Length: 111
Image (tube, rainbow, N blue to C red; front, side):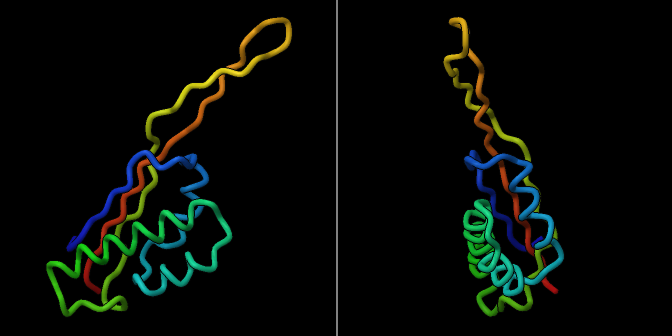
């Protein structure tokens, strides 16, 4: 691992983020950013920002590193805390709504 970036409390469900994170594993940074820019999913934009941030962290240590030489070795979307909300239901009851958050981690290594 040469660089790592973590986005915490992202307001996307972990399941939906996992669908976007899974295909970018083992890709180079350039390929992953190209794939994410053409992905029509809500989670694609914050994950693309996170991959770019991890690459910027790697460039701090290795200024000569290119996007083609950095590989995403680890990309996971874990469950974060849930925001609990209530909605009015029939007969004066309340229905609970869980607004889920996600912790996304991206690690890079050299090719």
